[in-house]
Image (cartoon, rainbow, N blue to C red; front, side, top):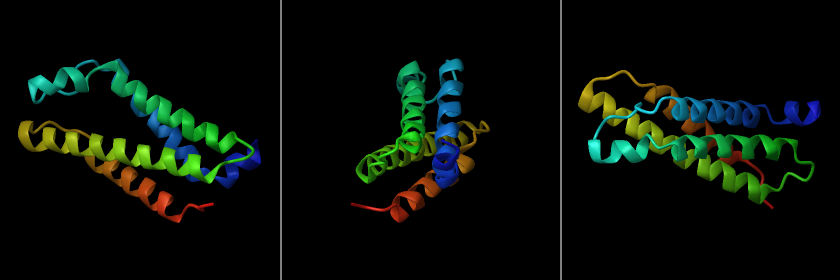
Length: 123
């Protein structure tokens, strides 16, 4: 198990951060406020749960002995998509409302996920 964690440190960090982001979004029910029509959907616990599930899937891939490249690509693509969407939605909040949101760090994480996906092995 330790060897699996050492062999895939980026996956471990990204998976853990996505679980933490998901838990944060689940706990904070009014994190997003603009536009009001979309805020209700964006603040839904399903959005946070999606991040938790993606993070857990990434961590499960690390611990899986067979480590399918296809599964890795799917999880990385979904993670990059969701992190990019989160970053853009946070950027919109910064530009429109002027509220502080961690869009830069989330965009950087999305870029790292994309680089990891690009460099990952394929079958």
